[in-house]
Length: 466
Image (cartoon, rainbow, N blue to C red; front, side):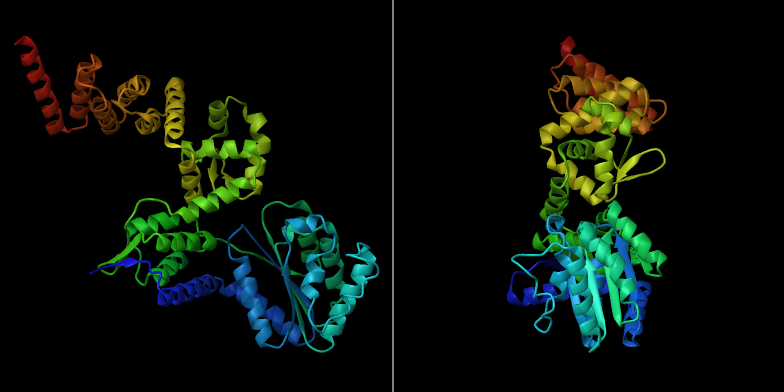
């Protein structure tokens, strides 16, 4: 029995919301140790002792899910809540995120600011915020929960440096989160708070069992191998897995067949393309060019390869590399760079129009051949670039087949056969490619295919004689 995954009925809307909540539960299920540490923070505050927990991780790793769960739990326990998040606009308003989080109908201490607009005097704001929190803490334990502090202004970071220490004898629990991508001022704040005794949580990617659990919960049955392989490209990032699940459901791209969730389409969901575009939009032009080019080269790439493709030197690309790494899109290994998430790499690569993508594959294949290295890898790129009538790419396939004949006969056979298939029979090069294909197929042990080509060659010779 086969059922399509995807339904726009009201009942389906309710099921979708339920599945989204289930995804959050699965993420939290994989964060049991982190949840315990945060619950210990709340427990200490209920015993009239302050404390700080710092949460870090790459974008989409589940920081906000953990914070929302903590806020819900604190509300049930009778905490006074001050919750909010910084954003890019906070850089222009020295004090905004923290005072905004403290506003509630019973807190009028912040609203008595002198003059018009938002005052910017740090001392005034510090006094008001401290008074607000002390006023709240006299009646109930307080949870101050602030997300996205990598965007916070220096003034807010300075306040967060001082207030936990000043209020440490009050029942105020501080839960502070930021992206782990480099933001030096927030780095310093977290380091200083940790030295003062704050607990620090670095959220790691979900393990594979948790990812499978998310897929199983979303689709009702375990994933098949193709769906599992696709989800593995999220590298354990729960937000990216959730976007993949939502996109597959939106596009009815998964079927339930014989107790498994099976991909019904090889296309990447539009949601993933939009997410990749959003990530690129936050970068400068040079960093975007670097990533778009690198996405075509493969899962891992050398900086010198991208530099040659772009007609630059590795040194001139270093600022773009740093920007891409700061945005948590790219990561570095010992000898190469790679996209942090292969799902995003694929989406970025697919943003390039097909003719341009073919041209990039051809350029890189020719670079590899010219260097005399990785002929099999060069062949893979040339195969993606070749099309009928493209004499330059077909000539590159000829070279790749010849260079891989001894070391990788199967690759040579595939390349030579494809070159022959893309060659017009009337082209003078067709005979030479037929001979090369038959030789490569024989070397690869694919004698039946070689015999067919040899038979066609003989038939062609007889016809030409007649």
